[in-house]
Structure formats: C-alpha cells, structure tokens
Length: 205
Image 1 (tube, one colour):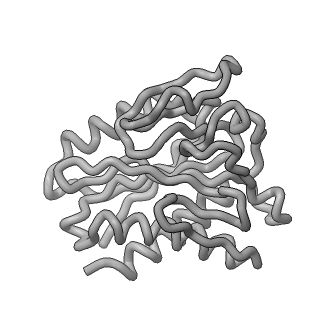
Image 2 (cartoon, rainbow, N blue to C red; image 1 turned 30 degrees about the vertical axis):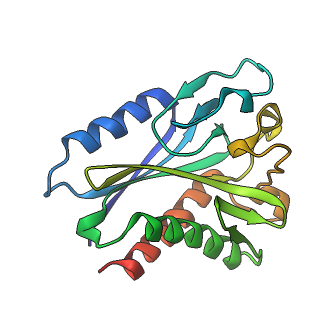
C-alpha cells in the first residue's frame, strides 16, 4: 500500500478545495492515494447541510460553502489539516472505519504526548475533556474520499467564538499548545500523518 504524502505548506482554502475535487474526479484505478498536509489562511467552511445560523457574527473571515458533511468550522494558521484522498474499495475500508481510523490517529498522537483524548458518539472529532481538539469531515465520490481532519496546534482560537463549532452552541475548543505538547504545526502534521498511515495499514484489507 503506497500512499503519497504531500506537504503543501500554507495555502489558500478555495484553490485547495478545487484541487481535491479535480484530483478525485480525474483519478483512475491506477492513481496512488495521497495525504495532503496543509495550513490555511483564516476561513470558515460550511458543510453541505450546514446552517448559516451557526455563524453568530461577522468577524471579517471569509465563508466558503463546501461539499463535506458537517456544519461550520474554522481553519487558520497554527492548525494542521490533513486531507485524505483515498480509494476506499481498493483499501478495503468502509467510510465508518475510515472515520474511526482518523479519530484513532489523533487519539494516538495525543496519547504519545501523555494526553488522554476520546471520541464521542454522534459527534465526529476528538475531544479532550469537554473541549474539541480535532474536527473531521469527509466527502465520498465514486468510492474515493476527500476532505479530512484538522488538529488545533498553536493558533488564535478566538474565531471559533464567532460560530457554533460543528453546530454545537458553546462547544469549547482546545489546542495542543494548551496541553503542554511542544509541537509546531509542521511537527504535528508529520506525526499526525504517521499515525494516519499506521491506522490505514492496520485497517487495510
């Protein structure tokens, strides 16, 4: 199983979203799976069934409507995002298993730094206590996934207060730097992609 890991650095959201769609639409059975590690400039993204009322006030951050599941979330500098461009039938992995694998990768990363994290039924993502540290959303097209997971590392969390994160009013958010985990977003991206690859190997076939 060879998955290509691409480190794209800090990129704007919309061109990256378009690139994921194009990649997925044009891939064939021969196309290698890819993980894209990125940081984004400040942006809110609203999922397909997303309700605009979860955006509480305009703080001057652009909003992009996209085609993943889930409600509104925030991406910005200091948060690492890993996009998973995978052929699920070829990996012999189901969507639900993929979600579990992504959550487990974040839980394992945090566990390696002595922090206990957990998933919650019916609320995708990873939580430390009451606070959400990682959000995930996927779109599956012709059996292939795109979008992925974002992990809060060392960022300005205030834009989250202008929304109901993932549709939950008053949901607290937290980041690894608040938990005395000394990682840069780059380091967090490397470790997260390592844990993701490990999870995918475990689930593979």
